[in-house]
Image: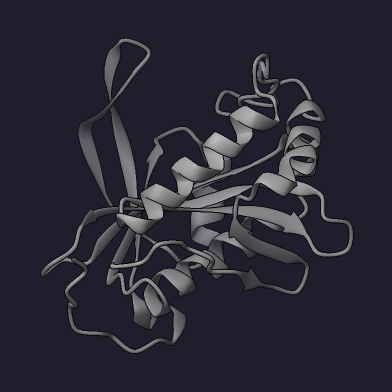
Length: 199
């Protein structure tokens, strides 16, 4: 995209979503170390942060920047506006530009903040930005067939169940089927845009 940095910041009623920055290390660390034990099959729960000091985190932020500058992926950290608490992330990864303008959606909320609507609020904002600011036409989420919380989130923001892709993802030493949920600009009251050159 010809840029040297990526600084897209989004605001919602309760949240700020922006690229991860080195000065957010403490909030990031507290968010991860405050996690509860795993709450369900697809909740990671505790994470080992051994070796994840501020220098490591600065390198992570730089890698995120490089991925955005080269249009590989855009990773938004989620913060609570009132307190600055780090709640999780939402990411968009480019699958193909040119005639498709197609991206994959990912999201994760620290489990101590589950069931408060933060995921729904954050993902909706990033989908809209994906269409309006990043010029995607199709954004999809690939979800395990039995991941009820993730399915509920996708459906709650108006994503459409499109299909099941068989043997789509390699997990736990086997190829696993995934549900595909998809969103397009008109689903959010936005106009379609023609493909653009991204190089």
